Amino acid sequence: MENLKDKSIILATDLDGTFLGGDDASRAELYGFIEENRDWLGLVFVTGRDIDFIETITEKDVPRPDGVIGDVGTTVMHGKPFKPVEKVESWIDEQWPGRDHAAKTLGEAPHLRLQDVFGGRRLSFFYDDEPKAFDSAKALEDEGFDVLISDGIYFDILPRGVQKGPTLKKVIEAFDLDGSKVLVAGDTLNDRSLFETGLDGVAVANSEPRLIEAIKHLTNVHFSKEDGAAGVFDALKRKMQTIPELEALNV
Image 1 (cartoon, rainbow, N blue to C red):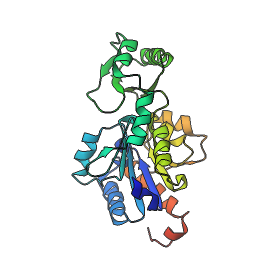
Image 2 (image 1 turned 120 degrees about the vertical axis):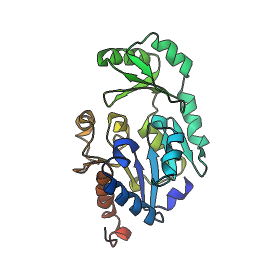
Image 3 (image 1 turned 135 degrees about the vertical axis):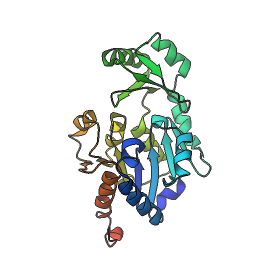
């Protein structure tokens, strides 16, 4: 991700519902614009998805990112092929008590169904009983974990202090990037920590109502009236208007 230092804007975006959201025409317009402007525009995926998923979609029509913060902030990769960013992943390792300890703390939990994901320092489930899910979260937090409940279905056990936002801030620090160049984008509660970094951000129109409620007071967030990729492009154009060398671009 060293090349990001030379970019005028760094788009750090969630995938599902955000960068991958909206209609085919909106995605094609955004993706085409990114590919045509890679000289000044950096791209980082900040997602709950794993590296295998990202490798698959970028073999098709999705632009390949300069870096990936995957597995809800618990994996950081860059390069081609993707390789770990050791100076950030070592920090994540220090915060992670381990899957076995998480599973033991959780105990019997019939309201949770294990997700078929194996990447990152996390343990992830689907939940079907919200009050019981919040009870389980409290027990885990008392044992030193963070728990992220989002989109009415996802239950992620994470290292304390490690989510999308904090990991993005670590990446910015590790590569000595200019945070004022970063634009974050998301649509669910697991993106809340991105907006709480204070970096410029966009919540797309199809965002989870609980996310909107949680971040409605944040002055660094633009609440787009467009869904998914169109909302990201809307915010990207707004960001460009604040950068003198990009104002002349006709978009």
